[in-house]
Length: 193
Image (cartoon, rainbow, N blue to C red; front, side, top):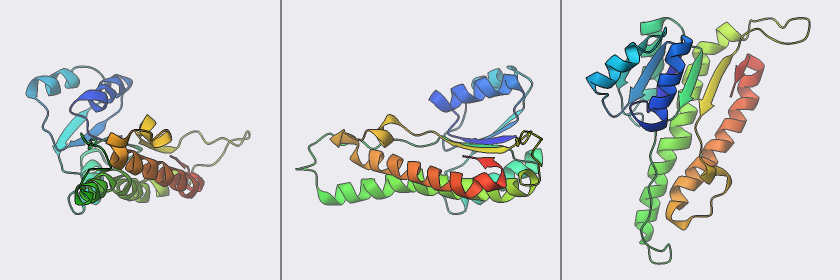
């Protein structure tokens, strides 16, 4: 059972289409509504069940609500895919861009990416940890199951060379840092990040 944000179009929708035939049950959260035709297509693609919720991931307590709604619908949570977001692109040189527009874009992009990723990951980990940290390792030192938290980043997080995407790239780079920190913190709880 997993949470996926931003699954009504593009890469998020493709992930839903790929996971359902494998038997994954998904709670998908998006600010956009999915069409009835697309939802009917998904419900006929495989063994897994999907429930779509219209949710603004930036809303107060959105992370806790997404976890609670998933637990209410499916009774457990095994993985999270933090995918929702959008890039703010500047159409003018940074040397002439009004600084207040840069500040506004930076705040928005940081709220969308590292902040919502961190809060959703931690809200989910609080539910997943009691289940996964108790799984014993086999004789080879491997556990047969684990929780997982995935964040979709961007090449901009590794190679932020475009001035039109400065706010987006900075926020994605911060998300990479959050991911690395969460991997270190949640790894001992048997949750992969």
